[in-house]
Length: 340
Image (tube, rainbow, N blue to C red):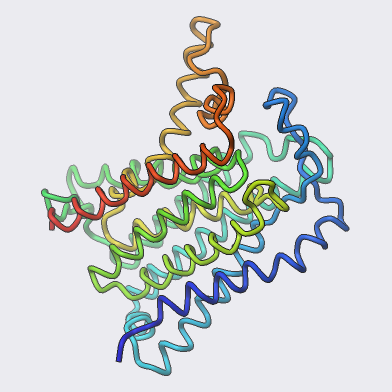
């Protein structure tokens, strides 16, 4: 019998996320949890002011419910997902990844809550957010180390021992990796449907990678994330009826990082998450260059706003960035398979 656990995870996540919009969005409107717009942002975005934010709750709910449903089916059918989670190592990797993503989502939730309550586009201070994100990242990596993660795989090179010698440098790099990618996804969430569409493509890539390597728990998690993103796009595509807020974008970042570590090859997120990196580096370059020269490289950063100011529609930016993610994801999959 063909294993349909991933399909169930994707379908349930899509349905739950999409249908929850009929309840969550009116409730957010009732609470007046509307988005404020930065004064320095594009003037044409001012029309989005008041659109409900914190819709990332829908994505989180969709992922958690779908994984529970997928596990229930797997336990009954005897498929790999439930079997793998009977092993303490796989269970630890799976749960620590989900909890890390939820922790990042919780930080985003508090940030969003402060923004909407104080009616300004400022939430947690930079120091507060950085401390909390680094704390969650460190706890996640400590859990991986304690549960027995001893190697990381680099295509064409092989498994690298990360428990002694030069391999120990992996852990501080991994700390910046988790922290950096979570924030990079947050920066990508600036246009209707952008972060959810790019992450949808990336999650599908991880679903294929986990499928090729027979990783049932990673396959189900990636499918759940892809389904939830697809369900959210229904409400978030232009003109957006709801924004995911930091609640959603930081949860997405956490999930993408967790998926990369679950494969044992976190390095492939560099290609699959290429748009996240481009968005983050555009901000770093802009800020650094402006501090030195008082001039700008881009018309506005993150780079999706630069293309907007060059005359691109939001739909075009979303399509092109998603296409770039697709091409880079295919390259990541091919390199991963050839480099085994």
